[in-house]
Image (tube, rainbow, N blue to C red; front, side, top):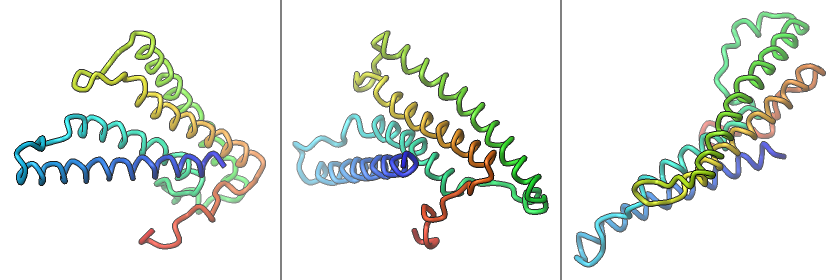
Amino acid sequence: MLGRLDGWMGAACLVALTCLMLGEVLVRALSDIFPWVPADIPVAWEYSSYLMAAAFTFGAAMTLRAGGHIRVTLVLARATPATRRWMETVLAALGVAFTGYLALAMVNFTWRSFSSGQVSISSESPLWVPQALVTFGICLLVLQFVARFFQALLGLPLEDLNMRAASVAE
């Protein structure tokens, strides 16, 4: 369920990013016609970078659950089921360790920005807000790796094939 929430939040970030960029293009086009229209949206590039980072991290957990991450399956395909299960368990544990460390670092980074009142230079937006979104996406990825670890340990299916795209066009 959290993986699906993660995917929907990533999709919402992409929609917001698209709307922001279309708004930027529209404002620029209108400024050529009407001199009183500003030439750009001052925060568009800054906020689009925040939305892009959030979309990447929000999509990661759902992609892991759906089996969409890039993997080298040459060794796994030739391994026995018991060896494959052991390897998947170890790899999931490594995923928990690495993403857990990243999540802790991001929580610390976000907390320092919040407690110091750090703001963006260009828009004076509090930086902890976009940092918290990215941190939340990474924390969801950690939870998905923990779930994958237990699924591999217990011999349960690791991926939800219903979450995969039905075709390349999706």
